[in-house]
Image (cartoon, rainbow, N blue to C red; front, side, top):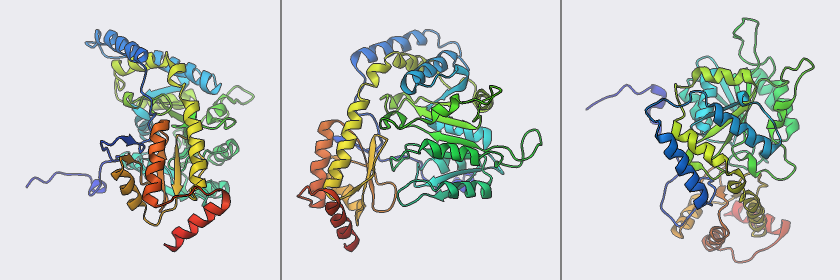
Length: 403
C-alpha cells in the first residue's frame, strides 16, 4: 500500500464543489442562464484563433491590454475611472483571492471573515498557511460594525474578506459600513510591517462577484478607490475590490476574475503571481468578450426583475425570502431541507443546500426555468395556496418550527 505525505491539515478533506448533475434545470451555482450569442461566439473564436498563431511565444506577463479593458468596463458599469495599473486579473476570482493571501497571509498571519458567507474563504486561507477566523453575523445577516471593529482589534488580521453582495445570503454591505471597517483596519494589522514601524493596516477585500446585480441606488465599493487625501495619496490604500466575468457577464467557462485596488497593493500581488499565469488564449477571449459588454450585460436587468419577483412569490407562499442584490435568493426555513432538495431534484430541478440550517439557495434562471422551479417547490412542499404578507410568512415559519 502506498502512503503519500499529504499535509496533516488536508487529511480527510474533500475537494470543493457543488453537485454537477445532468438535470433539465440547474439553479445551484449562480450562473447566468443565457449563453453568448452567435456573434459573440464568432468573435471570441476569431480572437482565440489569432492568438493561437503565436502560441510558440509566452503570453503577456502583466496583462496590459486586458487590465486597460477591464478598467474601461468598470468606468462604464460603475462610473469609477481607474488606471490599468490599479487592476489585476487571474484565472477566476479564486486565483485573485489566492494571490491576495499569498501576498498578505501566510504563517503567523490571520484572515478574518464573518459567517454565513462564501465557503471557499477558509480554503483560501488553509491553502496559503493562513490562520482563518470567522466571526458571526446578526440574525438578519448584516454586520454589527462595533463587533467587527472589536474582532479586528483582538485578532489583528492581515486580511479581512467581506462579500457584498454576500453569498449565500444576497445581502449587500452599506457603503458607510465599508468605510467604518476600513477605518477600523487602520493600524490594526499584524505587528510586523516591512519597515519595522509597528502594526500595519490590514487589507480589506470586498468581494463583489455579484456586484452587477445590485439594486439601483446600491453603491459599489469601487467608488471608495477614487477618494484621495490632500496630498493626492489614496485614502484607502488597503482596500481591494474583486469582480468576475463569470456571473453577470455570462462567462463562467472563461475563468476570468479581477481585482481593483491601489497601485501599491496591485504591485504586491504581482510578486506572487506565477510566471505567465493567464494564458494568451484566456486573454484574447476576455478581450473579445469585453468588446461585447453591452450585449453580454443586457440580461442583467431582466434577471434582477426575475429575482425580485421570486422574492415576492416565495414570501406570498409563506417562506422567509431575504432581499437580494445578487442573482440568487436564500429562502426557508424547512424542517428537512435535504428532503426538499431531493424532491426538487427528482423533478429535474437542482438548487443548493447551503447557508444557515434549514435554508436553501436558488439561482435565478430563465422565466421557463423559474416556472418549473415554482411548480416543483409547490409539489414537494405540499403548498397549494399563495397567501400574502405577514400572515403567510408567520404561518409557514410556525408550521416549520412545530414540525
